[in-house]
Image (cartoon, rainbow, N blue to C red):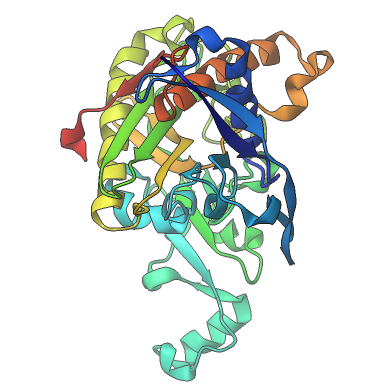
Length: 385
């Protein structure tokens, strides 16, 4: 006979997708007939467990389960039997770190390092370099600097300046036509990556720029060494509202951040590219993730299963290449603000419904139950990892 077992979850209000996962877990209780955990024959009932203040720092106040108890699931890995954050995730999230093992898939990337007041004179190759670094507040990593304006191709397409440790998008990304203008966007004490626009981007039939918002589920088992990668067949396109031009520096033309609600394989003017692009994104994503695991950047947690749903921004070109801009470890899916139906337009409503299906299915892979499914998540051949 089956027995009932209580599992506890706590919302520590860390952010990310924790609150949404807890919602999905509690909803499993609404259908006890299918809530059977096939691994041990127990019917699992999910219950909320209260939180308490944990500590404060300059980032703000943090919470943990009451009594600092370890629960079955919460959004603070230290107190959860299952971690929703990967150990070493900063190596994917921070742009000047991921370039260290994904260089061949990324546009050539220049990294700006802030000047450290503690740097000694011996760290500079000359007095002139030291004076220049102090004047500008930093230096180009490895002495690799953007080209001069008069070099071939230097002004043929825009340059993008992004803070290395942030994924803010839109107006937070600097755009300029000439390399000489790059430093106008650089602020002291901050790290940046600088890239020129991909040459010959693959546009929609009506000439608009697009990139693939490619969704990924990565799981590491309790043994700390067994990794499983899934990619989502119904990832999204982000399409500019304007025709693309290499001399139009407007945000709407150059920064494609708004997701298109129509699936890529149904998007008129681009659907003919989807199958080939999807398989290419899948293979190249697996290669980059595999490198991160092999190099020890992503680490297993012995005795604790971990997982994360995140995205990669890939842009295809007309030569059948794809280019990685960044990973986003906190993709804007299932945003809480749009639980209010009055805040949704037709586009947002469609995206929210798709997001919920994707995230529910991901959680069902990580924490299987009788009513769960794999859906459109596809397990990637482990030969890649």
